[in-house]
Image (cartoon, rainbow, N blue to C red; front, side, top):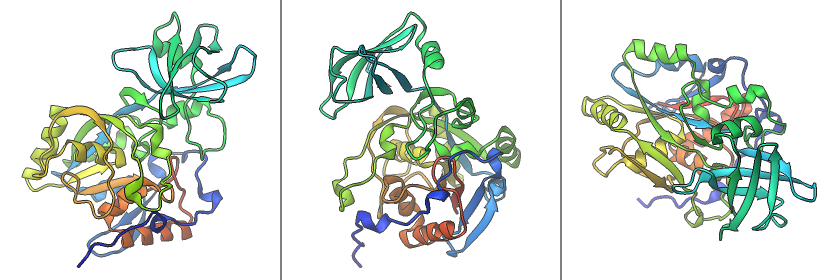
Length: 348
């Protein structure tokens, strides 16, 4: 039997605009949870705090500890015209030299400066072949302090409002530790300290890794053949402790539950064909889509993703295309909230 050749259009679906969540739920773990049972094909509608009922003692729950930083800098050019800089990642070995996106791109050429605040300006140093800019942050302050003072939380493009102080807290997981993401690992937004404690009390092993989410996570797949899509790269780090937790869990017959597609990308990048996860760090451009064979991940907790996106393809690779698309159809029909601040699903 030959494998089905998927087209990008196979991952399209209609979503009413009012189902794009513009703000978080009042309580993190009060979001809805669509439970997708791969063994029976059944769908169950629960709340997120019920997740602890589904993860057995002895299994491992893997979290991404990346921290969103205030990467969006609004300022003025020398002419007084508005300008925007979105910091992506620091250049190797340079704390204050970064790769960035700028607006208006046509006007912000090398040699120009954007004044962001009294103690922060951005010098445009160079352009990259991909249209990004190499910039230098000029500030007498420690960089983290300057960004906290003058930067904004970079909300996703489909959240159609300005960032607020509330977003600094809620567009961040409660366990975020290492700064570096320009977008939140959104499946983790539903967890509270109490819910994590409930997993631990049950005997579920909690493992933690880091993958810094890049702006490419929002990039649509424009080619009709997904194989022609150029996947974005993201930096990840899997510690010896995290690798051991995953390997020991699977050796003992337990399962690995990834909290978010970012955890899937990190673990699958760090795993060898025999299913062992190896400690290490680096950049990954892994593109997981049907019929991918998973090496290290058994179950997935995730939010609802954009139509035609690489993330929906990843979820379909693990959950099975027909079942995942049926789950999405039901989620739309039942009024689930979608995308970063929306509801969640779990693949059993």
